[in-house]
Length: 349
Image (cartoon, rainbow, N blue to C red):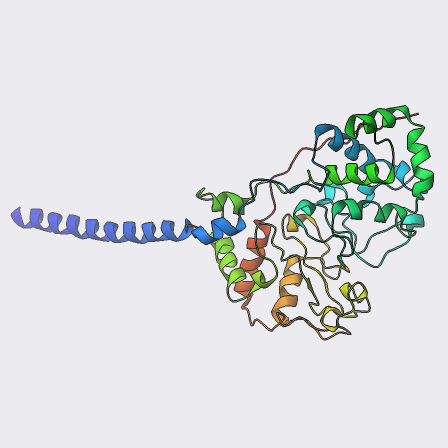
């Protein structure tokens, strides 16, 4: 009897010891899964408190409303068929899901439509950075023959003839009337409201548990470390606001070089934001890749020689398949929550 009791006690102790070991293992697993971001990462990658405003164009509800109407109005094009939103569609990540844009007369353009998401945070506009502000950028596509093909000298009297627009312009810019300047300012004011929403990555930065997978967290570490992606894609908006030749094939477009003819800028294009990246395929300025896996594979290979000057940041990474997959998981964690959006009812004559 005593012997049996001894055996039972011994067995109980053994099971308890095993369970304690399991508990330790499970606890370690939980700690691993809930790995916290560093203070440096929180400081660097969380959204700034304020959205940048335009010089002499501080946002007001009236200016945003006017800009929103103009952005969605096809009457801003020579054909009365294309609006800014035709290419920058809110349902498609504020892009158009095309390899390269389609413009006036259904003509195919040479460059893809960049998202307008977070353009408020960018120092340069357009792929080649030829505009230093949204106000200077806004009128470019309207006047470009291959894009919206609209003469501003013809557009202004058209808008002045629409009573609803006259009222909107007066409310937004009292005493300034309908002009090239107020059209540009209003569209820019609206575009600055298009900012990324909170993503799984943002919540993880704020200390919320269980929102990022182990794979995505590992991908973030590789993104910063072995892959050296932060050499160009850094900070809250994941962009250095610089220009780089990343070694795309079949390159004839010289990009930034046409604006600043410096050898190192041959074939260089602006570093795009990675925010909402899962919504803006195809990727690259020429729509070369359909998937994020292809994009990561491109960087892993170190790019390809082309007619330009390859960025010194482009080097073979020798990432494993598991590491590349982890980076893609991280990139997908940068896509924010869906934001409800209402298309405006436009003024009519």
